[in-house]
Image 1 (cartoon, helix red, strand yellow):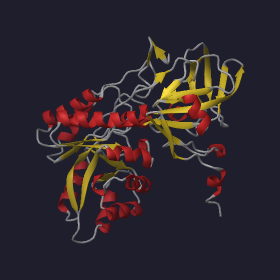
Image 2 (image 1 turned 135 degrees about the vertical axis):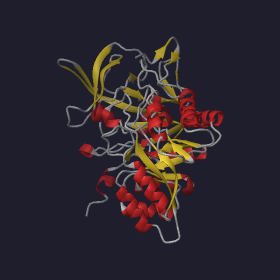
Image 3 (image 1 turned 90 degrees about the vertical axis):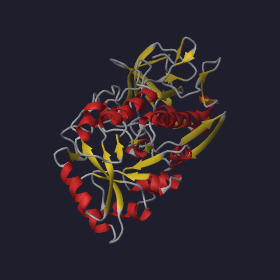
Length: 421
């Protein structure tokens, strides 16, 4: 898991990352040690050029392969208005999974008509907020939601909708992020979908624009999209085919992932082959847009040795829950000493034995006071950040062309107490 391989930074780091002559990581032209000193740790460091470049790569790939398309950032992956504002500026649409994400997307500057609402248990309040905002699609998840919307949509008005269908296909990913199999909480089964289609088409409240599927996340083999779309194709002819997202990313230097170009080409080709030409293809990249743009910086607090070597930092499951939630794998490096040499467990500071950020990390002689950099933390780090043990959620710092600016401040103790009566 070398930071530098044959003189170049490995592919898990944000675009443009370098290591200077002292061995110090340079992110967006900024010295990682200086970033840690100025903004403290833990801190999410977002390389703005990486974020913009990946957004453009998705748009360019769809432009090459589809006549009619829309790329939606899945806001759940990094629900921060400064991050989403960048993606809105680049021309993406936005998926939201609740009222809070809708508020963030609107603040980020997305046009309401380019915001689309997901969720398997949308509340009436959230549905009212979406209708009031005038969003694009509401993705219908179940029959109860059809009933609720028929009550809420005013007489004489109608709402554009998609139907979410679980095609009964489970990709090779962790069960907790597989969402399209036969036993899932999301969407209609292929057995129930025809009745949902009939009801929506018979109502004067809905404009049924198409079908939606999302088979899972962190997909590194794109072959399962074929049987999934084959199951969807049997349900009829529609303008829009939203194929969800799911493109995986490399979290460690040993991993690889399909290219954006291959992923997009595969999906568009499947629609043209199985459905026919002339349809709108929608896609919802989440982690593949935002994961690599961010590096989390920590400071080592202690090093202890028993059966193993334990290197404890000032963050953990409060700023990156994924390792504890479903065993997600990361790598880590000592800033200023890019080699390895000490195999250890990089542990968080929280009162849970499972609070381990990286098992078997290979660090170069870790010591208290060292700054540790963990790449590929843009997806679901900030999103799932929490206040366990009264921890303060980290700031988000944008870096670009040697300039660093805090776009989300670090929480304070006052923030922890502000809602108390």
